[in-house]
Image (tube, rainbow, N blue to C red; front, top):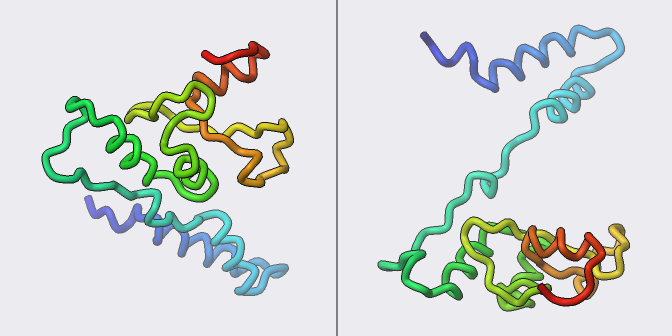
Length: 137
């Protein structure tokens, strides 16, 4: 079976032909609709960070692995991780391979994205913070 008939480009092109026949839309509006319906996947979605030398997750070098995994994040999360030396802002432990990193807004205002208002925390620590418990883990 030929896979080209089922490719995403072919589907998007067919949708463009259908949208372009609409009387209310010109070809530019049809192109905008296609871009919204089929957004391009950036290279960062498919990224992989190479392992240096003969490193292993089991060799005990948690600093190397937390720094390596923080390269998978971008924007505010990456800046928070660098500022916090790749450790959780709540419990102080390093981030490991399978742990999800989340951003916590200190003042609770989710519209305030100032760097001083954000801390990177483990998923479990973020849940602990929002359950209303006080103190460290």
